[in-house]
Length: 236
Image 1 (cartoon, one colour):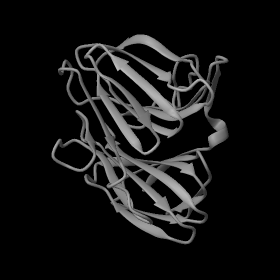
Image 2: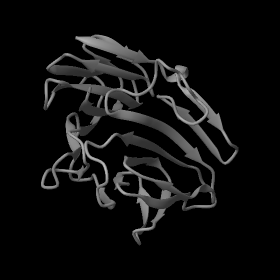
Image 3: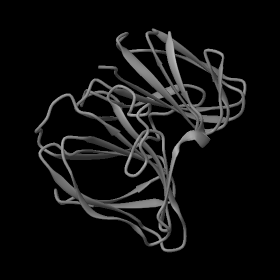
Image 4: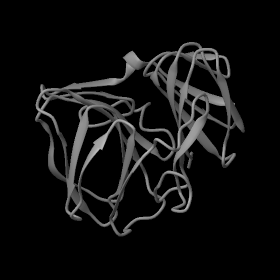
């Protein structure tokens, strides 16, 4: 087994007044040649946007962009004609493909919206842009990992153009779960949204990350009540 550990306080920082963000991997003005992603996983941005502000209309292409709200409401609009409010308990994916413009704004004037923005490199370029948003309420049980993203439109959760799987788990202190990789050539990036956990005896605190590869299974133990995101991606 090989691994790479990223402490929460080692992440890149951006403070634009209306936006505060922590970057697990190189992004924008934050550049670290040792942190250029994890396989096909290129971006994990931990964003906070003040009331009434947000990302104005801007373009993307050939990228799978996933948003997971943690609190507050995120208002989405795009050039495909989609307009929606994304809340905690939802997941959104946009396949930028041949090109799309969109905006992501705080839908409320009186509270911060917090969300994870994750970018995954697609396995094919030039696809038709698409948008998908679902509630995770029926996909995540207590003290187990629920699949929230896959490469297959017919599977549980949203889907993307990549051989990647996301699993989300809410754990009570003292509980554990084993995760078996879908493909032994893949790696898994463990991101702790809340709480404190152990992954194969490595201790992770809130917002820490651990990338693991050349392994078939992971054991995740919750030392406290915890919320954990597993991101399985190709490593090449």
